Amino acid sequence: MTVAWVDGEPIHSDAVAAELGRLYRGPGGHALPTPETAEGRQLRRWVVQVLVVRDVLAAEAARRGLPASGPLADADRVALGSIAAAALARSPHAAGVFAAVTAGVAVSAAEVAAYRAANPELAAEEVRVVRHVRAGRPVNGGRPYRLRRAEALGPLVFAAPPGAVVTVGGDVLEVLDSAETGGQDLAAQLLGAARAAAFARWLDVQVRDRVRRAPGAEHPADPAQPDHTHRH
Image (cartoon, rainbow, N blue to C red; front, side):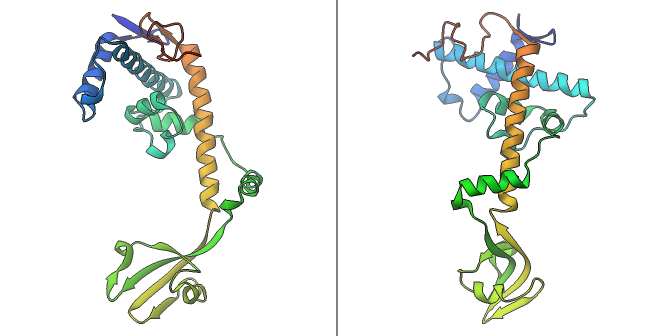
């Protein structure tokens, strides 16, 4: 039985059953609803939408000639909603399609400055990136970390140029670089949010234009389907 079509290609109920089986066998399976209840039917509809997005990604990768690229990283999925996030977490084409669709998205320095001006709590703070050894033992597992001026040893470290080594008693700090919190980090965060929003808009259009669903496979939030529970 066919539950949906993407570019005319069918998604069969066997694929839905297989995905549901994976979920019920998984670590959270005990908390999932009984299949033949309204909640269980809603879960099935949700799974259909995940498979729809998966196949849209596969079809788009084929159309663009993109090789398999793997799932999308957690940070890029966080703002995309549960259906898209679930599909992007398992699709072998997710990262490549996301990169292609959002390649032209940019955030200007003026936009970053305007956002910071509207959110003064994000004002940049100068820090030093250091590698630290205390009493012969690496601090932070030997990984570099950011030290603020107000922290212990901060004034001495801030007085030293990048590349210097500051020794105070048993503390040895190599000053690797200077940086600003809320600077590049904020720009990267705004770019990530802009890319996620652009991809979400693109995906909505693709699903609208390329997908047809069979009765019983409607979107869980479709108010026309009988198990829809959100009422005003």
